Image (cartoon, rainbow, N blue to C red; front, side):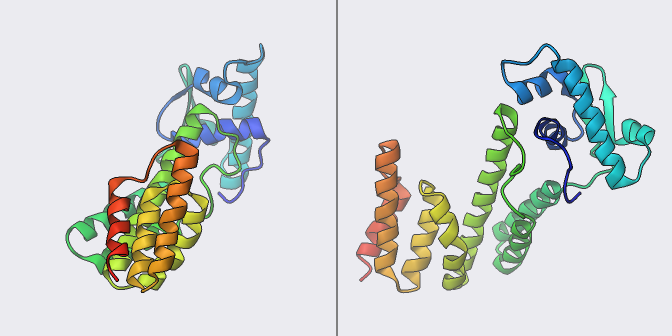
Length: 238
């Protein structure tokens, strides 16, 4: 499904149902995600309208009849609605399966195959999670979980590339994420490793300095022990 033609509120409802495919989402949860603690008196009727609009979109994309969509794809259940996880295929399902397989290969010592599989996992991402959806408590938690998972995979991928001597490839992979996540110690640690092992100790130490400045000024904390130990190692490697 390339693009969902829905206004912001029904789009949020649709996103919650997709993110919880296979599980009944109570109407109360949908109301909370759309309006937080201040729903209008028409909230329940509005949710019904948003479900109707979502089903119309599904009709256009799937070619199924209205009855088939309501019976097989986006179903009404006591107290809520459920989006089928049987008929639809989800990118994040494929992504998570590849991550498990890739990390399994790395644990078994097959770095090259793990690198290939994790690269395929990251290639599934086409932008930030829920980028075109207004996220509140539930969706925001899921968005952060997915984004953290992506960064964790990037760390693992960088670690493998560094072990394989692919320092410049790791540097290229990390340059933008480090800039976008100025407080993420794991990414900075890998970036420092790749820079140092490529021979650019000065730049690696500069990365540490900027990380420390950001952590102290934003959170009032020093970098963790692993990053500090890496800095010490780089300082004394010359």
